[in-house]
Image (cartoon, rainbow, N blue to C red):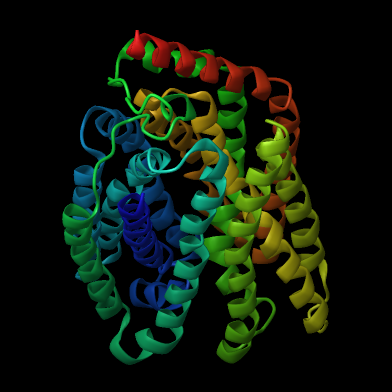
Length: 427
């Protein structure tokens, strides 16, 4: 038991560092918008196309990565993804013009498709009742990565240049590839399913197209796909444009941005853990618990973000309070959506199911930065952030209400199937 706990801790630490540094590299471009735009003479729309390019590449490759993760060793593939991250970031650092930077930055989307394998491997380390909390811990890396990127952009980039910053983050990607390759152990698919705890034997789970087809026969998954399509719009808009919004429309200087955004991002990091823990707690009481937690998150996130954007420029304290509240609620759904996917899909196709969800959500989200840039050019950045986010979350809220009708039955169907496989294994 001690060795198992040690292995779990080591894996989570390595994966957290991977996600932290990968998110730092991925999200760093937002805080670096001004110096990069000055280097290449970019409009908001042209900058948005850079983000959209990486999203398109990642979206196209999600189904392939999902298939590979379900067929082969996930730990080895994650090490490869980390190496690709470092290499493509170095290429973008040497870009001599906008076209080259657009192409090389788009290539960084290749490794953005790596998360389905990471999450499905974690699902084989931890049982269903604690997965939302574990995913919440890992997803803390996203806001902390953004914070680290913001600090690098404000404090380091002016001294050493934005290109050198990319050299550093790319190098860290290569180092993490080695850490994953030598430090993460592959686990049998289905290892943590409760039906196999007593027998101690886990049947072999093998990917098949027939099993993959069952993903689309589960009503819950269609609602997950629907919320995914709409739900990532706000993340992309806020991530890549909010820094610029504070600077140019709310007239914050660098110190004001730091003193405002550091607490907001720390609260957002806590929101992943709080949302995941709340989802697990409610899941133990009702199988609707994770979907209920997600619906609360998108509703309150929309209300508090609207209140913040509508706050007058001179009301700094009020704006700050509403942003803290929005930061707490916005991440609630993220860990619970991942756990819900694994609550209704069999172990041999979980990476594929998650990859399909990412594919569908990024199909819509790929247009979000360009759309926000277009709206910002036509109106204002605050208006673009507000309406893209609120409309998307309103759609997600309605979709979650629909998912509540089917989630219990789909979870029970999976548990029945796992029980049948356990009996067959011990027959």
